Image 1: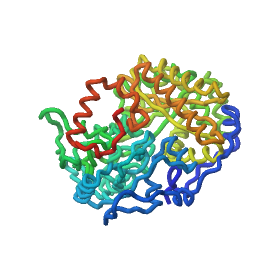
Image 2: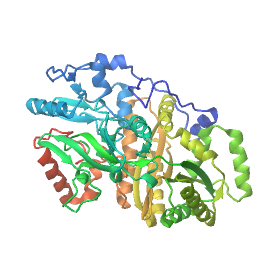
Image 3: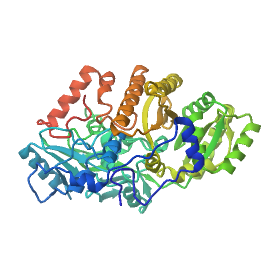
Image 4: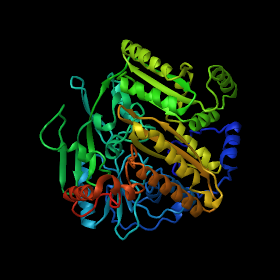
Length: 530
């Protein structure tokens, strides 16, 4: 069963080895396990619904709690402490686009706000009801999950927007195809959510981000139905796909989407290199991506992330052998790991591998085979479960991500780390931050930073710590010319920083577009726009 106050399935546990616990205590201090509220305690305090009873809408208190928050750290603090600021008044589970239209008519009649809900994996507040006098209806799209059509000749597939990643891939794999979109939330997140937040999969270097894969859709809005047809290309004015992409539920509810698919690959391999410094690793990664070699993934970890990755692995004997081997090759304590993924036909993989290996070695990289690549592949959707274990051990963990040009990479990484390192100095708490480059482009790269700190005895203190950290690092990103979000969208948490990226005219244009589709501000109010 899905966890109601954490990540993923209740039956899946990510163990924390003793060596990892010692490592964390050394970095930020010993953690104190918190006393979490139970689901029963929270359900017993759920207020009466402000929505009238309707056949499509459930007022069940537990369902309302389970749809009240996503996966951001403030969400976790609220759920674990039992202090949810607001809940939906009802949860609807439509089976069709027509039922979605009926729900929008009901919302208009009752002046209810409507929140589209896919997999509930937002980490920036997309699906959270906000306090206010209006009733809130959450529309859970999990029953709009069918494969509607598949055109193998044109390599297009149409799905209900509520289809989750594993079900989408299973349906395509059975026909010899793949979408190739694998965000870390893949097991829980949905196609509609990927489109609405401009998601980037871990192998986007090969398959493309969701904007490249998204071909067309049907979206139900308060003002009517928008149908975006699927063309290979079009010069017929502005592309309405771009309006749907990243709209975060403000314009309407995506009910079905058409995507561009690929044939299943003949082979897929992941290799690891180690470098003596991050600078050498960046030079190699940039050379590889700019060379045009066809890889599905390049991921470069800083020395700090490499250290914690090896510490959490728990294979002390294997790590000891690795360290001795690397020392002989001149790679010491500041080592950085580069993972390279190759996906496709064998001849193409072999050619790309030779080119990438040459460039990696030219920058000082030491090849260590496929062991670490295989381990990453095995655990890439399991790693988020570590958040549960860390919380229960007294540690909070969150991420921040941006993207910038190659010439600004080192300055941005330094600024992000400095902001996080010192944000809690005033209360004598330490923060451990570590970074990787995980989505690379010929012109620049994303920068993905994870930060960890101790949970306080008072949930309000923990939330205040997070707010200081989030504000400091977000301002550092803006000050250094990075995007406020490379892959997680805007939601609530990033909205205060959007003006610096879009400008006054850009924001007013977005408001006007959303007003065209949603004149009464029914759709997900308070999200995306500051």
